[in-house]
Length: 72
Image (cartoon, rainbow, N blue to C red; front, side, top):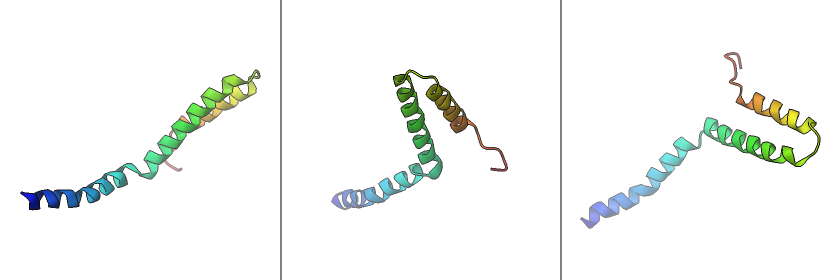
């Protein structure tokens, strides 16, 4: 019984590394960074009195949410 438990405990680091490797892909990290940028810009834009930054935020959000075409 203790041998089985020792084998399971020894395999746990490999399991966690495999899970993190699947999570930390380029598309996942890109998605997270895009969401952070959008959230930050949307929170910062209302802090000013002009509308230029609101328009820029809307354009950035639109561009980040666009799906790239087949040639990109």
